[in-house]
Length: 148
Image (tube, rainbow, N blue to C red):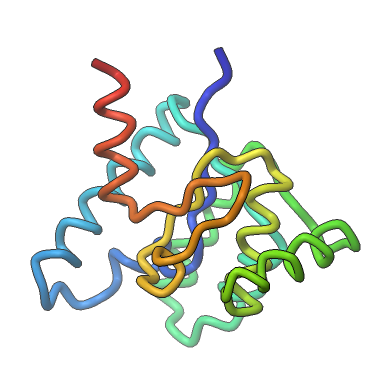
């Protein structure tokens, strides 16, 4: 059976660096950290993309940048720019999703991810054919429920 493959967007990758002002942020940090532990253990596969590279490069916080960049080395798939990604992103935009988010989701689909993990509430309200958009907390609930 194929391993579960995920794509963590920039919001979820940055979540541990956010101020833990609310319980949900704290819970999301724990869930995202768990996902990363599963990636390191080889239980879950990580996909990466040119759009992640772009957003991480623009991050003004050096600590965040240096903490996130090494995760690229953990990825099993890398999606670069191309006409197929652009066309798919345009289709995804029709679901009411912003350009950058649509590019991330298009890359996740092209990388054969089953799950797109984000903490962006606007994205989580949407549905995109071919991939599940989940908060890291809901993803952990799902995979732990399937493991039983």
